[in-house]
Image (cartoon, rainbow, N blue to C red):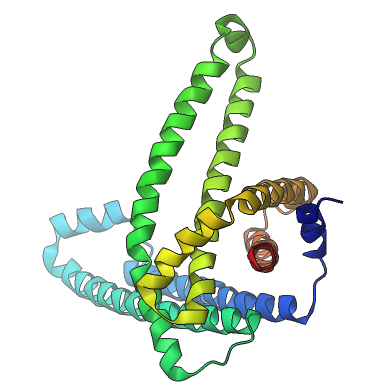
Length: 280
């Protein structure tokens, strides 16, 4: 049996490390999701009380007709806006700090490394530094997607008669292939980030670890392109299996969101371990 395919099959042997990393990630994103839903519900309720059942257009009309009577509502809305901004800022900063902590716990667990508070703060610096290569990769992504979409559109329209006779089929093919291309490009970026985390856990040097991730990508590309192929096929299979379930839950937004969260975190936990085994 092909060594890489054997490694792929072995990646489905979910051990304690897999479930531990899954729980780290799931706990983080579940709390994030719960906080978002609760905060959104509270803020919406508060806004409804301030508005007193009026729409934005009605409030604007009242402001024009009777500015003095509307002034208390506008003051309450200003206070509401300030509180919302403060909550969002606290939420974003807290989420960023906890995200760095979870990354540190996961990657130190995977590589059997010790973890200290001093090392934790370096993870925050690393995640901030990753903004720069992320923006560069975004430009690369937009360029590749534009070229791919243009070439695909050209190929699909070579036989113009067939294209216009079967518009729904051609549109489905276009959407599917563009979706797969987007997913592969996203996975490639996740590989780069994971390789950065992998290197950083060993060295704790920010820019050196980012540079090392591209070196590892080049060094192990003969294995990594196969990994991208197999992980994409796995994602497609998982999507097909879950499609009937998601169709049944189409009207249950929260349950559907929770299902997507669980499957995404399960997939990423598996993908992370599979990647580490591939480059080891």
